[in-house]
Length: 282
Length: 307
Image 1 (cartoon, rainbow over the protein chains, first blue to last red):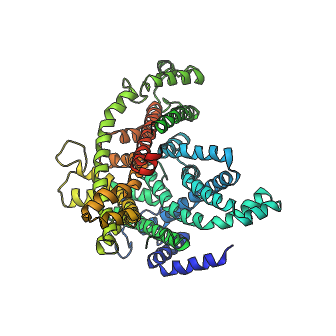
Image 2: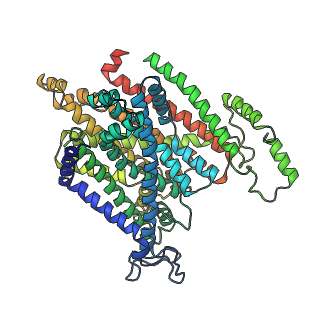
Image 3: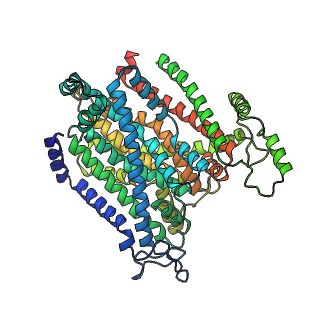
């Protein structure tokens, strides 16, 4: 791996305050989500019906929902689901997109044009509808959600990777490796993949917020995460239902979700600028 | 250009037929029949229902039937709303959704291009930072949060705008259009800023300035034509996004449009409605993508002359 590229990039990233702040927030969030069972003041399903919806207080820092459940705890537990969907579905998209892109770019010729034609065609279809369709037909299950979202978000990744691979294919070290009889698989793993990690990392970081938005969107419509599980999308949905009297139930989950998306976008933009100073417009 | 247009149309037709076929068979393998939820249905009634909707024929026969009806523009009857056809329901919902999308796009274009071009011209001043910060908010606050927040502020707290409906109370179209348009305004602002920055550094702009053209002429006549190509290319995919946005906005504001029909059909498992709207949405999106690609080609003098 090209060490100076990565250390240069790290240096540039560390100078970008917005990106560093975003990254710091993300780490904090991931830690909070991971430790939710230990740091959440209550269980996400613990109901105190006599309390009902109560505004923020010393006992319940962000208040309680209509069933008397602690909102802070529910946001913390919701973070687990929202971040999990974000990362796992992005992972699925990454695996499909990178393999597709490398194969198309490296083999080239007819295979490439057919594979990219498929990507072009899929691009033009309303995928959100297919996700809804799948959720309706096969039931609303978390694993299906990962798969369905991942299966639609890989297209751009495939295009990016293919472009990069085509650029690399004619460089001396790849030709040398080919001349030495390196197998296709180890060519992908040892020579091509390490050289395109930068763009992949950038695009993956920018895909996570899109995936989280998609999950939130589905959950908001009632087609995503189902109770008693909760994600930020379902919390916002619940908040909307009672916002006239209990506005905090909408506002706190909304703020958390928005801040997370901000952090991911800032970090992703920073990473892009750091890894590829040419495209940065500052 | 004409050749490109026809080639793309030729590709689009089999794609749409494939979408229709895949959706059709996906729905056929869905567990449970469409009338399972109605517990009180006796076997005789069920048999009659299946007969009426041609569900007792083999899948293959149904498929041939459906596709030949489709080619004639008949999307079949709705399972949940007896006596109404899917085509009819689409025809009722479509004008509403189109109107909503039209206002949203208009808001997005006006707000987005104005602030994006301004930001590019006043680069690195507060006229650049503030619109771009607002654009970042527009991108990070999802529609399903923006809508309720606008309702909370303008509808419930300030009580100056209606909180729901479409065309019933004065001003009830403002909040839905703003909600849907804002996210796109943000994207368009960023795209037009980027596109303008790229163009403003090029030689022909310097030439235009050197000729002594007014700054207004340089920007409006020379820079914007090239600088806004990314915006035009974005409009096609944006239509797909607007569609998803209309699901949310029409649900929040209780607007009787196509988006809300689709979400309701998904909840009711109204399979013919789902199938029909899916095919319809796909056709619409393929069409708008084609239009926006052609417009972008036409705006770019290099590709215009080449073809």
